[in-house]
Length: 239
Image (cartoon, rainbow, N blue to C red; front, side):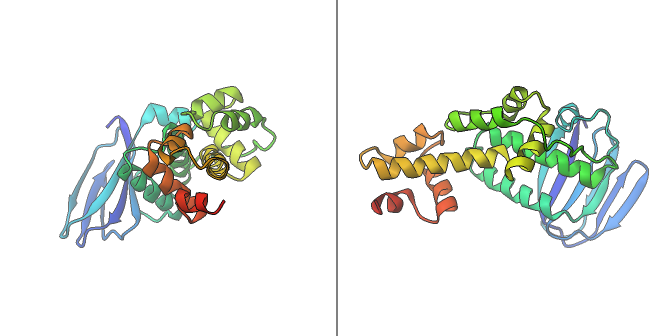
């Protein structure tokens, strides 16, 4: 394969899982929520036992991974029964996004790629990403998100503004502001949405959704409820 393959077993099979990779054989019983990982270029073969398993297969281009992880020719190892709580939360969020047909936008996709890459380095490599980025200047990224929260800002664009790699930007931004650029953008949108809902009772919710950068009114409503606990209509009625 030209891609690294990360498999999230959100519904594991009932019987034996047999796998052969790089001359090694594995026989195990997978558990719900575990991961299997096969690096690009590996010769691998597996057979399933009983049951009707369901899994999310995440393929990451090997060259893109090296760029995103800011490392060349990283020595990743195969592994087939991994418990990774942080990666599990990310995989469940990705499943939700797939059900929404990618409605959240490019910054979410860029951020997920970076976060999965970091977790892959942590779980399947002896290399540890650099962390001494606390003093990096990420204010240009913050300011762009504040100004362009309604548009499709990408992680690559933010990183270029700060003269950092995407990996460095994500870690520096999270280190300084306690959140990712994507979550900061969502918070900015919700804050603006509250202002618009309280200040203007005439603009339709569908138009507010589009003005804020949401795919449609349904997407806007779901995100608003997730952050505030009430629908936009109920929030507007409280003015």
